[in-house]
Image (cartoon, rainbow, N blue to C red; front, side, top):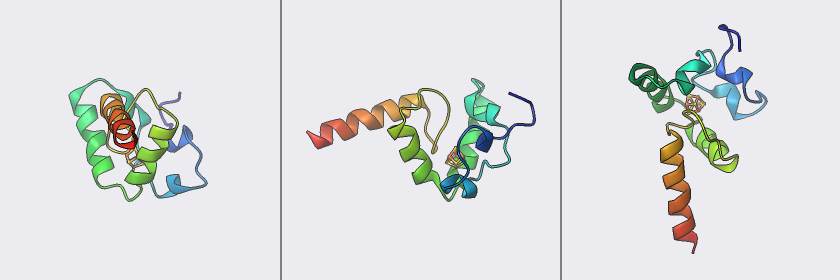
Length: 88
Ligand code: SF4
């Protein structure tokens, strides 16, 4: 990935992604291990108008890595387990 890539280089841009707060952000923020990067990514997600759509995309595609919709992979696993429990 080039250093000038943005998150929307990684996902289709013909839907909710057009309104993503991270449209011009460095995608490495969303896949880094450092606390500073994580906080910066979470701050963008917190102000993002398509957070719900992004999270549902990540849940439906079982995104295993990175921050999507203001959640990390552990948050998403918990959400999926909770939804399964509630559906049972
Ligand atoms: S919720 Fe976060 S990762 Fe998803 S589009 Fe918005 S800023 Fe990007």
